[in-house]
Length: 152
Image (cartoon, rainbow, N blue to C red; front, side, top):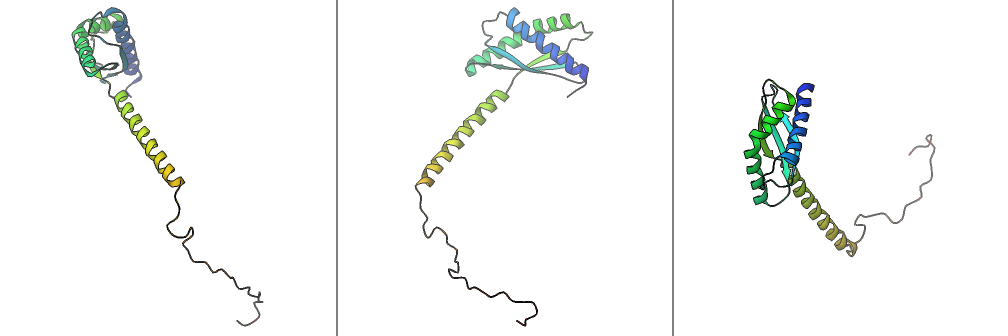
């Protein structure tokens, strides 16, 4: 993470952008958007706004276009509310984390399914040979205990 000041500023920008998207931006292309994170460069000149949007790839692309067209208005509002000498540029990026998480969930579901099939097959399985393939001396000879004084 950056400095506490930069982190606080990023959080403030996140709140302002989320409020703008919820209340002020009336673009019909804008889907159900959630701002997931804002990252600022160390000099606070550039802000990357990560977002997720529900819907198809076309709806996600339309939302991206709507965000790009609203960037100037959103940036002006960020500058106005924060009262900064220099308002950071805003770049909107679709957050890949939810998609990656969905893919991981799918892979875990596949693994659980395969494990269940293996367990099902193993339940009715028998050994190809004996259950215990190792040789054992069935008869153990009792050896009398000896004293250490006795010769062997």
